[in-house]
Amino acid sequence: MPIITIKNESPSETLVWKHPERKATLGSQIIVDESEEALIFENGQHLLTLQAGRHLLESGNIPGLENLIKNAFNKQSPIYIEICFVKKIVSFEYKWGSQIKVMESNYGLLIPLGGYGSYSLRIKDSASLIIQIIGGGKILTTEDLKLKLLPIVERNLKDTIAETLVKKEINIFNIDTKLVELSEEVMESLKINFERFGLDLIDFYIQGLSVIENDPTYIKFKESLAEAASLKVRAKAASESGNFYQVERSYDALNKAAENEGGLAGTFLSGGLGLGLGANAGQQMSQAINENTQINSTQSDKDLKEKLKDLKDLLDSGLISSEDYNNKKNKLIDKF
Image 1 (spheres, rainbow, N blue to C red):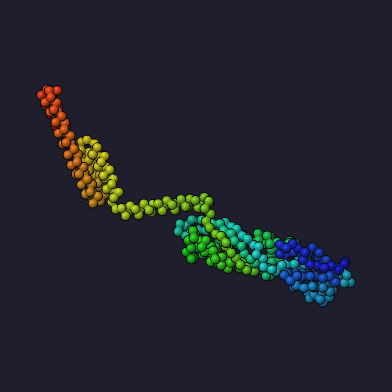
Image 2: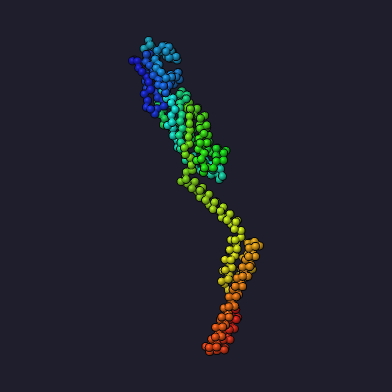
């Protein structure tokens, strides 16, 4: 088998790449770039990690491979190994966007939030990452890793934000003013989770976080808040106006009563129209009744005198007889 050169030939967005050639003869070389490292596995077991540089496969040159080299038949049989190249640079390509629901502290309702942001990380423990996340896979890209980490990011976002809202009494509708503080809290909670997979979280940013206004749950919540605010304003106005409303209604009732015949205003009052209005309101209502009664009485006197005068003019002009005059006069007086 010919001597070969093994190096990382994966695309730029690839984080972990397993070289397709598993057979390496003595004299072959492994080239590792400055920003990466190469891990050598045999039958799924991690044997050693090669740092940046040129590594030649020959007896004693690479510690850890001596037994494999010795077992090679006549030093011509291939060595069966698996070589994984891992990029160690910090990547800023991790974007996230999520919808979460958190409990609103004042009303105990689940309010939907929409958020987005980014984070940066690097691979710290290559062997741990390969064993736990890649397994038998051949490649891991930035997008692959982002999708695998998204459930962890969403869970920690929800838990940390909900806990911070309660602990620090942050108003959910002003939450966009606390993005730096919330970012730091979420980052601390994520670091522990990422370390389990051999990842080092460098930065975490919440760039936007606000209530989803077109969500049906929030629309109903906003309508309820508006109704509650309206009731509060009306209650305050009623409290500040005292018994104005009650007196106003009393005057309305008096005006209607004054339009009817038969002394209905007095009937309303005796029937308890003023009950439940308070002592002051009752006195004001009684005074209003007296004033309306006096006005109506004066108006009636004036109308009667004018009608009697007109009737007398008819008698004096000879248009009616004395008998007609007396009959009509008596009827007017009786009616009054």
